[in-house]
Length: 160
Image 1 (cartoon, rainbow, N blue to C red):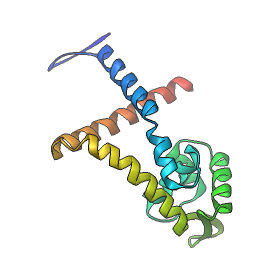
Image 2 (cartoon, rainbow, N blue to C red):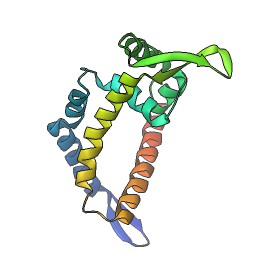
Image 3 (cartoon, rainbow, N blue to C red):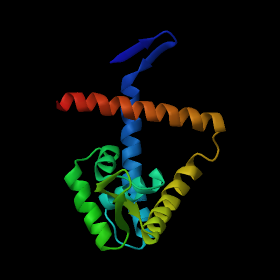
C-alpha cells in the first residue's frame, strides 16, 4: 500500500483519513447548504451548479458545454435550465454563430444568486487558507486540480 518515490516513501494509506475528514467536515458544517440558504432562493445543488458554471464562464454557454463542465448528461442540464429560466435566473439567447442554437446566460437575479453562493463558500475557504503563503495556496490549488483530474479519469475508466 505504499508508493516509493525518489524523495522517500509516501504512504497512500495516509491519504484516506484526510479525504474522509474533508468529506465529513464539509457535510457536518453544511457549507453548501449554508451557501445555498444565503442565495435566499431555496435552490438545490444541481441548480446552483448550473448558476456557478455560468457565472464562472463569464458569459453565455451551450447546454452541452455546461453538462461537460459539470460532468453530467445534457438532458439533466436542460431540465435545470428550464426550471432556472422559469424562475427568471437564467435566460436563453440566440447563438450568434448558429442561429438554430440557443445559449444560456444568467439574468441579473441569477448572477446575484451565484455571487451570494460563491461569497459564502469562498469566504469560508479563504478564511481556512488565510494563514497560508501565496506560494502554498498556489501549490495546493495546482496539486488539488491535478489530483481531482487524475482521480476523475481513473474512476471514469473503472466505470467503462
